[in-house]
Image (tube, rainbow, N blue to C red; front, side, top):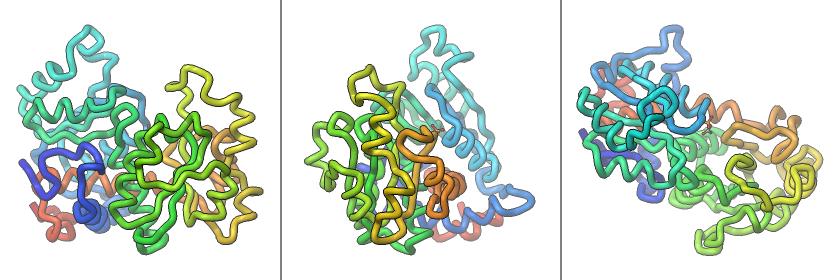
Length: 320
Ligand code: CP
């Protein structure tokens, strides 16, 4: 079934600003469901969704599962270990076998950039990209944008600096595409070795010094140093990285205004972000996690053919 987003959600590069706004607006009424004593509406009753997580995840996997359960979809989780993928079955064969059991949607996290699109072009079910290699992580960027919009009441004109390991970050790419489509100004800051070669073609400002980024920005989205994707040689040492690029309260105190602090998680405390910043008064890191459930409910609802104007009614179980 297709809705206003098309068949799949593979990334924000291919969405329009209008489609991004639609997802954020649709997420608004869904926030309230998670605050109820009984966190469940029958909106997606009868839908069957498979969560294929071939890479580690806490936030995204659990958040999708909560979103599915709160909308009353039937959800099944498949991990690489313990499935026939560990015996050499291909991604497409796995998905086609699951489709033979009459599923409606696949949520996929995979270590290979492009895996979500590869799958979407080969199966009939809706596909949602939950992070593919270093390519895109669209629902993370959407929940980041919802969190920014909650605080600033707008995205247009905001100055957001994405700090740290941009090279390995699918979150950075989705945020760069998404925020610019919503009219925000985007910058990056990090060592040259952790910025993509094509950074100058991405429409963003590049800061070499974190102090300059802090002077410029309204909000910092601080990225995890992805040590598991580094073969060595990117940075001299973690201590050196923290000394030069780490976001500390000492540095933030020199800013001309209070900066909103975001981090997609998981955090390397004491490396890219100090604990007093992560847990400080301007951190919205846990608000991001809370908003993730509403954003994923909105994406599931819209991809399953839900009508945006009926999202409010969907809270009571109608709206498709
Ligand atoms: N932000 C994020 O993708 O976290 P997980 O890897 O825990 O899902």
